[in-house]
Length: 81
Image (spheres, rainbow, N blue to C red):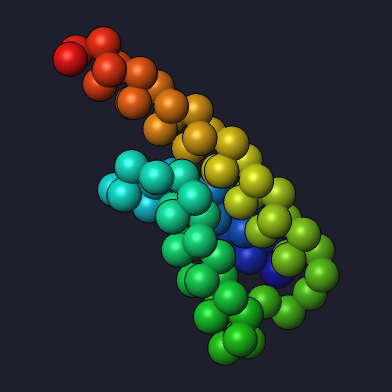
């Protein structure tokens, strides 16, 4: 159970950041990560409410960071032109 809690803290945040970096859009990154987490919950890998809450917190942190990252990328691109 402890391993799932630690993974729930780390992986959703990293997935949002990864998908945002690949698509250059933080909303698409969040939606792709939500889709993956929804499928895993449907398959039965999410068993408890604390794990769902931790996933939500991690998604929020990843969304916040990826929003800043995309904004900085767009600002740098505007300065280069």
